Length: 192
Image 1 (cartoon, rainbow, N blue to C red):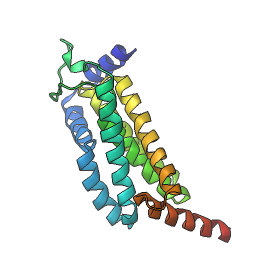
Image 2: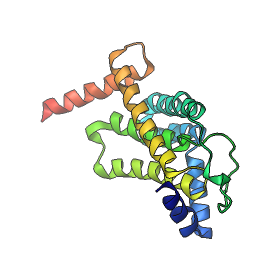
Image 3: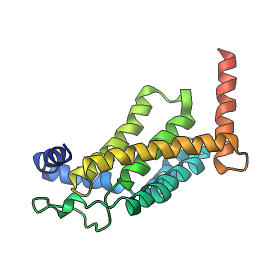
């Protein structure tokens, strides 16, 4: 199944337009890029108080979660197959996709923090971006589909775990952000 999906996306979809499109989304999946962009983007949207929580989600899902799993689970990248044309050079293990992990962590954390204030369109938008990052990793032949799926689960899990820890530990940097969010949520529910 992994091989069939990889072939379909990497070879079947191949075009110059998609090469450029997925290069951009692959770049957007880098944790450092996400940190800088989320800082600026959240500031523009007047949600800069979410920045710390989002950066923590990116860092936690990318370093201890995805990178540790890569050390523990040796798996060659599809770019090692003779018929692939990888668009990036990666030599490290492929499982799970760190780009996908950080993208889903960011999307999940923003949706958690936005809570009921986030429209369905906004939620779909954040997760669509994360999905496109994941697909870009398959398209560029640097990850298997199951690497991307595991990265998505790792990112969602990391953000949810971080949110749970932050809710219960006042000294945790995310606590202030979540506390404000829950206070706002509580005030809005009283008005209803």
